[in-house]
Length: 328
Image (cartoon, rainbow, N blue to C red; front, top):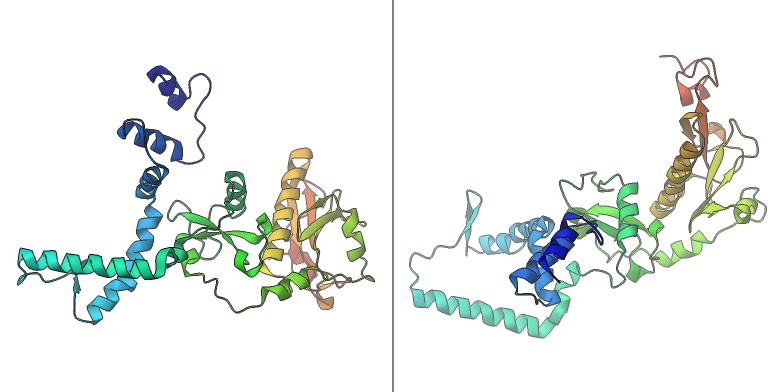
């Protein structure tokens, strides 16, 4: 490797060029240079951690709410002006060294007894999520935590399995969600819900259901939902997005099923918008229960493309389901 080639790579001049989906490449190159050309993966990983503010913020919360609170309640330390304080006014230098040695011994004994599992709460699933999958999950979430809504520019986002892998959850995009590090760390996988019941429920079909019979004919689908064109379209390219499971109400779907439907909704919307430039808007609707106009007891979402001038006065849109309520 020579200086000019590396310089051109980083500055994206010539080929190959450095393409970045994160800061990892320049951090790794910098670390290797600072280490005279050689560095272990562990050393490079520590440099990544040093740049990851979400890790620091995570342990700030841990510090305040766990050891900080316990030590303060036990009268060992104090907390003033956003600073933890340990009164060392009566300690000699030898006293300090002895306490440090006692702490090191306590750490060693605990780690020897419990091993790496003490860090299990921060461990990642062994099946790493690829950058492309992560990109799609974050894009679908609009780069916001799907629990608290905070943006990724404020708090780093993790890609989380909705149904945990260790509870039988599939390692597929429909079972993934974007969570900020705070929401993800507070989410426990010690849930006593029997997720095997969900696995069986996903397979529920009704042989007499008109919609269930259409599942195999769909060419646009994912693991939990599919889409077909409406046989009686309100407008051209009117689609139905349907959960595979036979279920009456959208509100009875699991989170992963709802996400699967919404992912297809966005996918078809993007497809139609790029292929048909006459489309200038969409109506999205669900008839949930007989009194709301549902005629087939299998949940489905209508995606209805709209075009300028397709009705004389589009004002009110979906409000027109109740006559006379579209004007306000």
